[in-house]
Image (cartoon, rainbow, N blue to C red; front, side, top):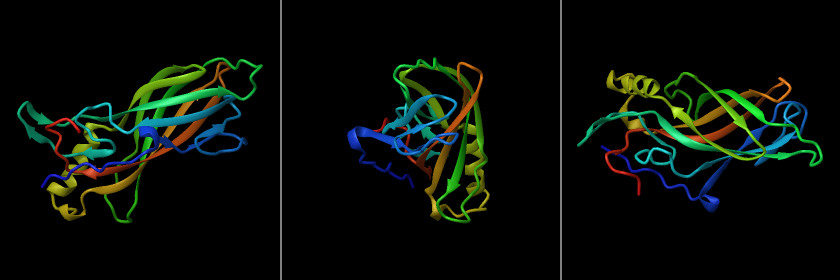
Length: 199
């Protein structure tokens, strides 16, 4: 049975992810200070996935027999990183994103374990707004998750399974100093109808 996507009612249609800075600077939402960036950082994710057939944070792990074939792809979303200077009179230069990891923390103990995902992506982040596509869950992890249910290791009745996706971004500043910060988003992993675009 297909499950309809959940509708998240979010302020201005944008979900602001909680961000934690690396270093001794204070951490808050939506912005934080990292000692090795000299920027206030905020991270946000639009309500809708960049994939028109993937509804928001509902992650479909079962292939759908659509008219154009079995549909199963990486679940991606658009990440926005905004940088504002801590000191308006000091230009810290750009930041450089090198990779990010995604950990899947189950909301209910005993839920299926999804292995951490690492994505190597080089990107220069400038002062102001920066937007790029990030993978929430790749096809390989989707298939492994679906196999747990196809082999009756877990009952279909527990679908969808709720997780917190923990994004950890790693990079360097203009002086080669490392920085890291985290962002969090709820996801619901299960079976959804992706043969039609989300409404």
